[in-house]
Amino acid sequence: MTDLIPENVQDYSRPPALEPVPQRLRVLFAGQTVADTVAGYRVLETHHAPTYYLPPEDVRTDLLTSAGGGSFCEWKGRAQYWTIEHSGQRADRAVWSYATPTPRFASIAGYFAFYAALVEACYVGDTKVLPQPGSFYGGWVTPNLDGIIKGGPGTEGW
Image 1: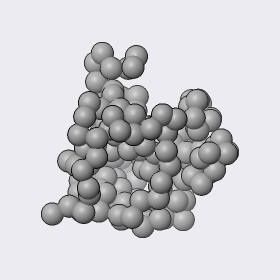
Image 2: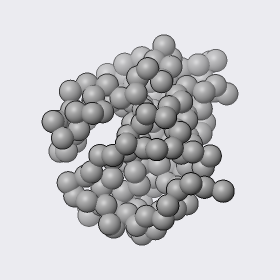
Image 3: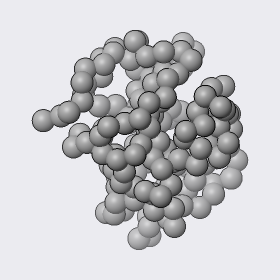
């Protein structure tokens, strides 16, 4: 049973919206819980699965090392990437954050987002998520989402 309400990704706004998440968010890697919070946020953007951001105090930051480089989001600003390592397992650039996001996204400064495809599992409440299609976007796909989610072949240019 899920506590997630039906949503259509085409109804999400552009520019994206930022909202607190009422559900518990968890991330597992190498058999360990590496993030667990009830104080997360999500970013909602047209045709994207929500991207979840978890506060640093609820993330095992001791398992993260800077991956170097970065990327730029027209809405949130400059992102920094992180590598996660535990028990001999490593996932390069599996995590990202915004140290100084744009004013609209100031609430997620220092928060961490995880690529679901690069960790063992991510959960929204009791629901295990699927990664957003493709390798560029980091949204978490849950069964309550309807509509066409950007990221698969032929959708990057929308």
